[in-house]
Image 1: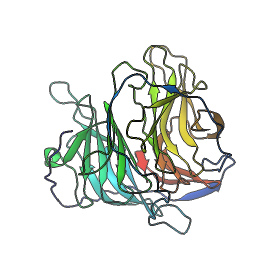
Image 2: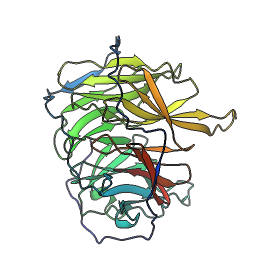
Image 3: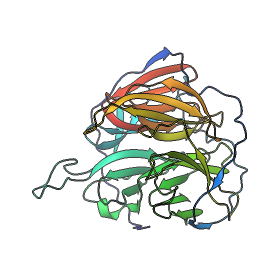
Length: 353
C-alpha cells in the first residue's frame, strides 16, 4: 500500500446542483425481511496467500447515524456528472460541500491521454473518512482517503492518504472498510490491515467486480468473482473470526454467461442484494438492455427480484441494511426501502450513504 501521511486542508467549494424528494409506494421492496437461507455445500478456493488476525464476531448493532423523520440518512455522498465528489443534503437534494474535484477531469491532453476523473465516492459509517476512487490510471486503481475537512484537488493529489484498489465497502458497525483491488483488505484508515488476502491471478477468486459486503454479524465478508474462461459468476465468503480460514465458493448458476452483477450489499435480513444486468444482442458494442434488483441468500439461492431502472448503478445500503441508494441510467439519485422509493437529486453518476 502506498501512503502519505500529509493531508492538506483547503477552502470548500460549493457547487449548485439539486433536486427534490419524491416518495412513492412500490410493490418491490429491496429491504423486505425474508426467511433464513437453507444450508449449502461450498467448495474450497484455489491457493491464496493470506495474512490475518482474529476478529471477534460480537459486533451486531449497526452504527447510529443522523436521520430524517422518514428514516432516511440525513446526508449522502455522490459524484456529479462533472466528476466532482460532493456531500448532499438528503431532504433538499442540495450540495452541502465539495469533497474533491480534479483539474480538467475526463478531458484528453495533447498526447491523447485522459485526465483522471473521480468515479465513485464513499464514507466510513462514523463519517470520519471520505473515500474517493479515481479513474482510470493506474490500472491497479487509486483510492484517496480524506478527512472531513479535506478537499481533493490536483494541487494536493499526491499529498493525501492513498492506496491501490478499485472499490471499498464501509462497515455498518464501525469505521472499518473492505477494499477490493489485486488483493482484499479489511482495515481502518491509518491502521494496519486486520486482513490482507493476495489472490493468485487466474484463480477462481481473482476477478473482483463490484464491491464487497459485510455480514450482519460482522463475522464474514463476501465478494463476487468471475471466472475468466467461462464467465461463470461465483460468490466468495471469508470468515473473519478464523485466522486460517480459506475462502468458500458458492456458484451463482442463475447469472447467465452474458449477464453480470453490479455491486453487492447485505440487507437487514442477512440476504445479499445486487443489480443484475442483461446486455442487448449487439456483438460489436453491447449495451445494457435490462437491469433488475436481485435478492439472494448467502447460500447462493435466488430468492426474489425487484424493479430498478435500466442502467442503474449500485450505491449501497445504509448501516441498518434497510435503505438502498443508487443512481439510475438518467443520472438521478434514487432510494428504495420499507415498501417505498423516491428520487433524491438529479445530475449524479454515483451515490452512497
